Image (cartoon, rainbow, N blue to C red; front, side, top):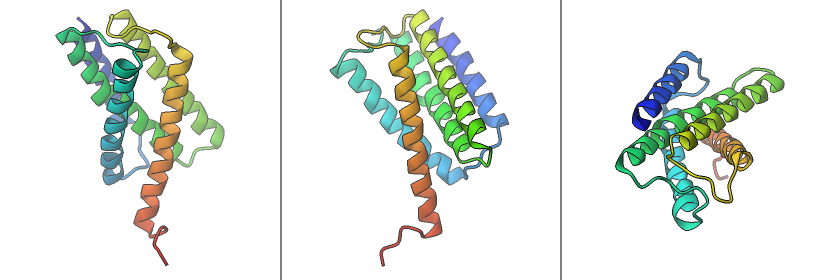
Length: 157
């Protein structure tokens, strides 16, 4: 059941991602996807295994469901947020859309809790929202750096 729910959520995220205009090139999105994958797996492994603040279920179905989340749902949300932050919208609209994306990631966390895929120990939704927000801003800064490489802004003199 949890795989079906997360697959439906992943399809919804992919459809929204495909519809929304993006201000990033394909190379930038691929770079960000792999970087987000590395950071996401590392961060959630630390939270699960090392700190045991957000332990995952140990069932096979639950593990596959969380792989869907970690490789599709979270990275595409974050790439979408970086794209919104790079857009030419007014600042209030950019940060408003960023808040909506963080809220949708928190709703996804509630789905994981409801499905029994994760449990919170010394962790809550506020910490999740802070983590996702900081993660999005960090990826935005990295994307700005990566874009600057293409323009030759960071050459040694």
